[in-house]
Length: 380
Image (tube, rainbow, N blue to C red; front, top):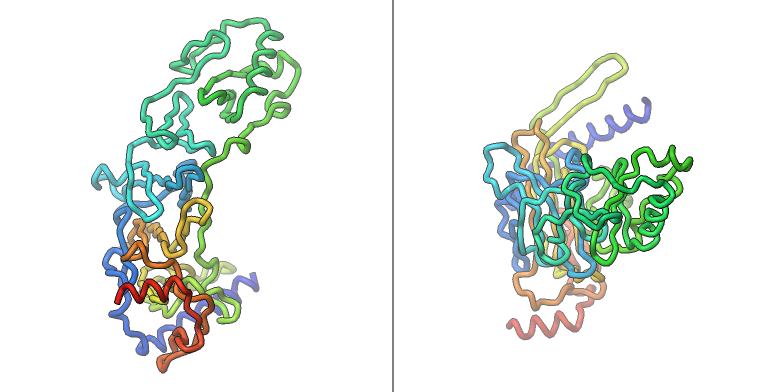
């Protein structure tokens, strides 16, 4: 309890100090993502409109988005849902995106995403992300080699428990991927999916099948969840905060409430965050975002080099909370205006502060890359 009160006090003092220095900030230079025009070397493009939320394909109830990168094709996969029922239909979609943020395709295929790229439902599956096929494929019964149109009603004809178990073990060994859902085992063998229902078999065989034969989901992996690069905590001393990518410049509270319910005492604030994002060519992107006083609720992503990503392409996701009417959603990309420009300008960077106390690059002490010097010479 004491730690919570100390944290609240620190946050409250930070809110107050931000408001006291607010007259030093040129607020007009800070824009929301959907209104931002970018900078000299970087454009800011909309991937998903601000009336939609990016979700976790495997848990739509989660408030944390999940973005997958395909380690084979270098595409990204996301799922979005409209914030309101009367929103345009295309806001609720499964989408594939290239490494620059261009939408490749979008379909209404809402389902779980397995690590091998299969779009999975309990009754059928899609190979859309793997090869563009949007056909519904039904799972096959290994005992009869026929398609199972309704797993919940399907009855296996093999009644001999020992023969059933031999078939189960055979497919368990052959499968490159095994997904378990309730009493169903899904086996992927040579790019085809099979289904075996195990209801009641543990008792009949006197073994715990799920314990003895666990899921196998780490041998055929192509979908990699991207890491959120945004800071976990924005309030701290400068030397403890990693501000190489994003930095809180100011916070203006427009709503403040004191809650006193016995031991449950806290202050709550919401308002405008003023943030700077630093890009590799030295450009500063000035953003503003309405959110609570603890976190601007911005998720930042870069695709790793290993999956075809560029250091100078940054993806931003902002998911809204219903209690904030001024908060918006959407997904955006900050990317080079010239695709041929080098990914970074400096080999090493030295920072100073200008007269306004803002962090700026010391042009004399920072060392530029050869690629940048060649590119800037051609540009002139």
